[in-house]
Amino acid sequence: MADQKFRIERDSMGEVKVPLEAYGAQTQRAVENFPVSGIGFPRQFIHALATVKYAAAAANEELGLLDPGIAGAIRQAGRKIR
Image (cartoon, rainbow, N blue to C red; front, side, top):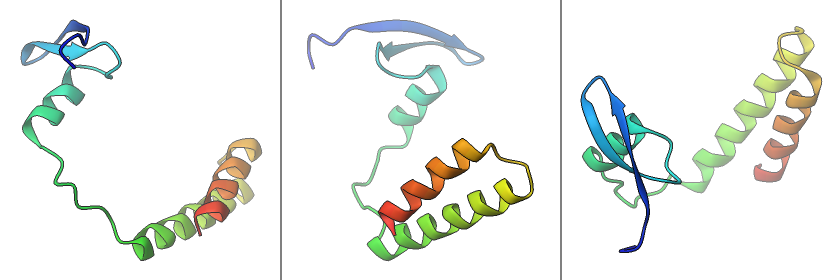
């Protein structure tokens, strides 16, 4: 990690050093200020979330609010996770 390359991003809080593969200043600030605990979500929660995403994609496609290709991709991912 010592040879990692950075760029300087600017936002309303000023400049911040951001790794080249990172998104931007606000994401980098979040990484620095809110370290990840390493505690993941229970498998049951992930399955429930996939079910909700699957149902929401189907409903929004049926209502004409979501492109059928995108809805199909979301449903396919939901099926794989559930």
